[in-house]
Amino acid sequence: MLIAALIVVYGGESETAPQTTGGKVSPEQCSVMQLNREGEALVAQYGQDKRIDHLHSAISTYHAALKLCETGRWPLESAVTRNNTGTAYGILSGEEDGEKNLKLAVEMFEGAMKICESGKLDNIKEKVQANLEKAKVAMNRGWHGYRS
Image (cartoon, rainbow, N blue to C red; front, side, top):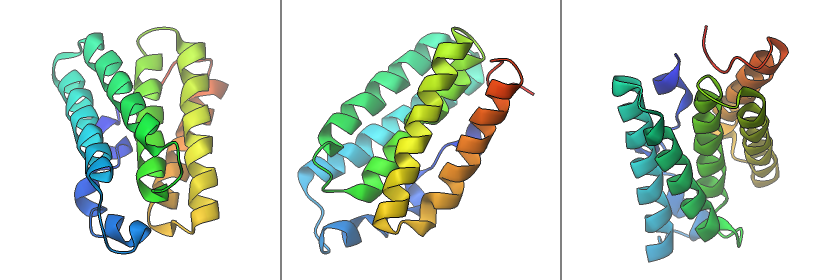
């Protein structure tokens, strides 16, 4: 599986996050970043032990982060979170409910792309586009998720 390659890790993006709010990072914005890190850790744990509950927990964690992003104040964090959520759904699609989870993955990636395009977030747009394309290829292969 392409787990590590599909997840956007905040480590490389954190320098850009403050620019989305005029150089200040709010406690809520920090919470979104922390929730993303927790979700990424859960997906990585799934990569080690293949326990599906880690993916379910990651998705729940990402959805909690998305609730904090609903106002649109932090486009970078929102796009990263949608990308990460889509990745988790895409991986989960290889384990259960393939069609449903791939559709959810595509929805998340498309939402992230809209944010990237409207917010001029070229720094993550390529990653989101690549993930969207992988999900669509998986759908065309017959709902088998991200498995090779």
